[in-house]
Length: 456
Image 1: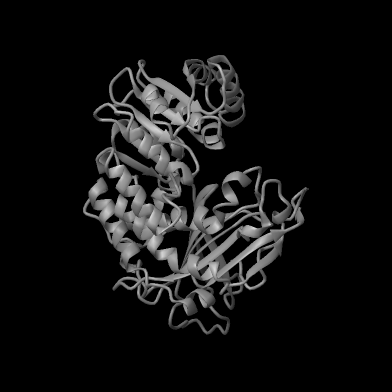
Image 2 (image 1 turned 120 degrees about the vertical axis):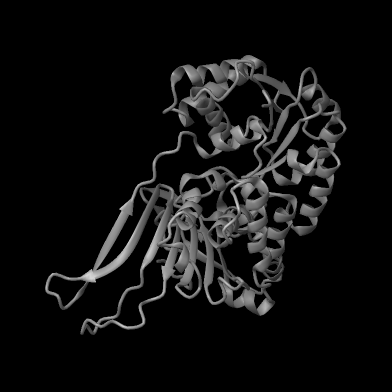
């Protein structure tokens, strides 16, 4: 187990909201060795004490449910260093002085190549690992180049391309529910399932993240990584085991089976939009183009929907719809598996049968199955809902990912070919959108999204 962690981009949102709270959870659960060392680095000229005060304030805000002692221990033990992630001398200073180190590159994707090159020149101790946060590159060509750079620094098994969705309890339950239950696996195919929706709609707007988000947009921020990863777990063939090779081989099979999209497909099967001024709940939200730090000329979308088809024996004929939007009227974060209706209803009833829907709530975590039954007068159908609440995870998603990084368990990490294949799936969409083949629609903040898109 590695007991040294260096976080690059340590004063950013990712460290404040997720990485530091995850380390607190690991500390509280006894998952960190007493000799564990945390070094945080960024461009600001802070002292150790200034960073520790900042870290304490962030943990008081984002890790309030964790024990005070664990919060204090992580904040007090952190060392801060001013450093440029693309400077080899700075990187050499950060990683020197001990055994193997895990370096978490918590920076915008455009900085990844420079940071990896600097780490390559920094003489990383043998056995070290590099951790990259999605998106992995900015398109297929940059992902290929990034993988080439990484291969020249550390072996593939030491590269952790992390996507925290894979460590979420309910996302794991998508796989567990279908593989561990005979009642589901025999009907987990296109003969019984008409459509799968993977949705991350949120009421949150930009929330001060223009520096990152305006150069990425909803398609790259959510669909290309998080939602495609969930698609892999929904659609993959049963792996021989949940070990890293078996699991990742089956995921890559899914991505390779996605039918390539033509320009006509993109026009018919994708939507993009951005929000206008409106009201979400009790707060007024300005138009995205008027948010601080946004360059309207980029025409960045805050809503993206893509409809995919898989060319495989199991899934030919099933529609997969991936969708994500910001500043919407309601949070909807789920996987909705829609089953085909029964072919005949021998009950003497005239009404149409509502198809069964199995929903995996991603946030908050839940599972529901919508059924139909006979109503009170025996002449009508009535909806029935079965609800299950997954057992809470011992660790938050980022806590599990960091534990895997330190232990060297790469099962939930994304392999090089998988990262490239995910870009291949969406390259036609990016190309068509860049040529304005799909108009950039608009929707009022607080609404259900663009008028052409339905919400279920």
